Image (cartoon, rainbow over all chains, first blue to last red; front, side, top):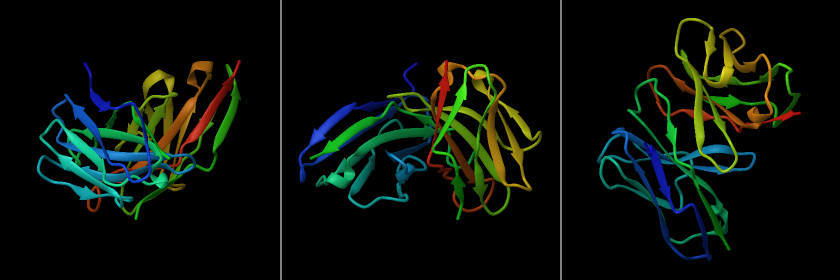
Length: 114
Length: 115
C-alpha cells in the first residue's frame, strides 16, 4: 500500500544544474500537486494537475516546470537550479480537486542547491 | 482570497495536560477546514476535517477540533497530550464552492510535549 511515492529523497545540486523530481501515486487519484516547504513559510503550492492532461500554476511557479505523464505520475523539473530553490518538496494527490477530500502526501525530497 | 493564520510558531505542553493549537481562517463563503500533522522527515498526514454539521469534529489519535464560525476559528485540541504527539501541525482551508478548490495551508505550529 505505497500511496504517494517520491524520488529521490535527497539531492544536492550546483547552481545552474537541472533535475527532475518524480512522483507517482497508486490510489487512482485524478488530482496531483507539488508543494515546497520552507521554515516559517509553511507549504506553498508550486503547480497542480486537476486531472490527467491539465496543469496549472500555483503560488510560486517561477523556475519550475511540470509534466503530468499519465494518471499516476506527476514530475517537477528544475531547469536551472538556484540557491533560492533549496527546500523540501512534497508531492500530494487527491481524488479530485473539487471534492471535500483530503490530500495524501509523499515523504518529501530534500533539495540543496549550492 | 483565502488564508489561514496559525498565530503560534510553537506550543509547549506537559504530558497529560490538555493541548490547543490555534487556527483562524479567512475565506468568502462557507469553508472546508483541515488539520494535518507532520512527523520528522515525513510527509503530512491527514488528522481531521470540517465540512458541515456538528461544530466539534473528532479525528485520528484522539484529536478533535472546534469550528467557530463567528470567530472564524478552527482550533485543534486534545484532552491529554502524549510525548508522541510532538510534531508540526498544519491548518488548511478551502472554499466549499466556487473559486479555487486548492487548499491554502498555514505556516505550521510546532507542538512540543514534555515528559
